[in-house]
Length: 232
Image (cartoon, rainbow, N blue to C red; front, side):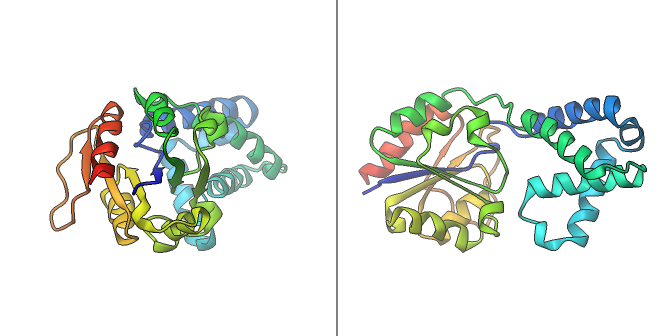
């Protein structure tokens, strides 16, 4: 009997690429005004190169996207000669993070999750760093775990094990919904959970990988998919 529904967030409840692009633009606009030497030295590609450098030099941060972002901004500011790089980096990150959580939910998100909450516990399991309170949907979730909290990322088994431990329920009582065939579907399947593949772009399923229990192309299909799995 299904008792818990867990969701990935990025590209499952909203499209992440335009959000990150917007967040970078807003951060760089702020920095163009407050720290112009940074915005002159680094475009989006330059920011990615700073990120790669931070991850290579600080492997312990690999699962913490927020700390990586702060560290790369601070590194760039320091190289541009700003003496208060740490304070400025925190301020720039605040601008970035507000935009990172200014998402456009896929149609049906709030309606579907609200309906499911009447019968199931609802959780979020994400490798990202979205803040559900800032997004405006924290009230829809009973629990939330991300990579920074756990020190591992999906599909690592410890990630899904944390959800099982939190609820005190076995995997047979779970359905996990996500967009990523490996991180979400394979990871949850390995933990013994049932799965629903959120596939808004209607991509082909990867060869040689066990398929999800169901596939949906938009969230208005979610309730029916959950009911079908629950019924079986």
